[in-house]
Length: 259
Length: 298
Ligand SMILES: Nc1ncnc2c1ncn2[C@@H]1O[C@H](COP(=O)(O)OP(=O)(O)OP(=O)(O)O)[C@@H](O)[C@H]1O
Ligand SMILES: [Mg+2]
Image (tube, rainbow over all chains, first blue to last red; front, side, top):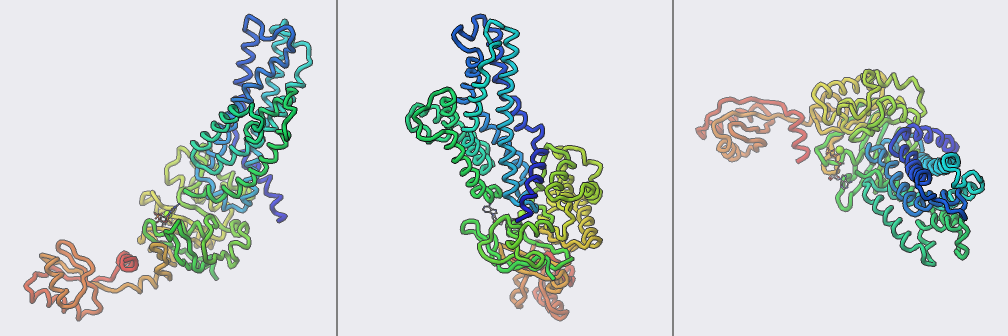
């Protein structure tokens, strides 16, 4: 058993090498860039100012970035990312090779979990930094919007942190689907079904039990709403997510060897 | 001493038995040819041996230890190549080896050694995407050799290669067997190939092991037959069957008749001549492996 603890760094160093400059890597980098640049252009170029006099510029700008992300782009991003992430192994028939190396299968799996979570987290950190950077740029380019009054970035960071943490279960489910199926169709379909259904039921009082609504509800909490939830969306998402990551290993580790 | 042995290994896909009581014994230091036609259960057996499929019953022992006892220790002493080599196509050959090397914890210098061993140093920095099938098989073999294993388990490593590629791999395997003393377990559906390579042979058909022994033992199981050239093989066949001979092969002008001794050859000739059937040639031959194989698998 003592050997196990030494295998994780080995497995991690391999995963880092494997994913450098792959589709999954670029997707994690470019997705936040795409969204923030679009919003930056509107805030900079639109003639009627995007911020009304009674609004805080940072909160306005943050919400314009975060809302479409949480309700649409981020779940799509996670779905695609997980698919690209595992296609590297499925397409190259790697599992039968990896599973007969003297590194425990569980350690190699754990390395995968850590790397995917790191990709998602890095993408969110980049998202935060981009909002902060472009907001500061706007304070120079359009001083009348009021970005120089530096009060709102903390609230923006909180929104991203809350909804990001609450997306743990969503990431775990998409990880499982992309791990267990060689085909990209099923994980994509399930990802979109999860996203659409979460959007439809979000205003229902029991919607919290659908794990894909957790980031949306956590965002509402961070924005000062969501008082009468039976459980914190973050706690719920973390609990379900950990369960799914464990389940996915035992359910998928032999299945992926077929074909 | 056996590097690998199994007893009564059984595995079914649904109700289709792909492995049916397979008991193998692979002697240390030997080259064990695992022969069988397409769909016989070779790949399935190899997946069982490596713990990639759970057997429904039976027992696997590697280097004298049950596989389940410490699979990672066993994996550390095995190099495997199953069906298509597992390679990351977007990466270079060297980058692929580096990934496997790190997981093994093998020394860095080993990469250039195995590249030289499989004669791939010239293409090491090309992307695997640009490799030919033969190059991929060699790189797969290099991957399997990285950890300096005691045993290689190879599933049809010459599949899809041209004759010179097949000869290269054969020479390489013989070399690493003789010079480095590695035990080799290799599956194939090419009898002639195993004849040139193997010291021991196991033959599997429809999930059952129908022969196991040395190559010599397989040869000694073979008998003799006469090869007859005549005008009409079908008529000749009828005539011979009236004299209680069996005809194993018959087409156009040629017949194969298994015989035990020279008297019987004369008898065959007489039977045909008395029927007025012309005999253009009559030759006694030893059965080759192909015949043995056919008679074992039918
Ligand atoms: N994933 C699977 N699901 C169902 N049946 C399978 C599966 N894989 C193999 N089989 C069946 O098991 C039997 C043995 O297959 P296996 O691949 O072991 O044969 P093989 O000896 O390796 O053949 P080949 O020379 O073609 O590689 C075949 O009848 C095949 O149809
Ligand atoms: Mg096969």
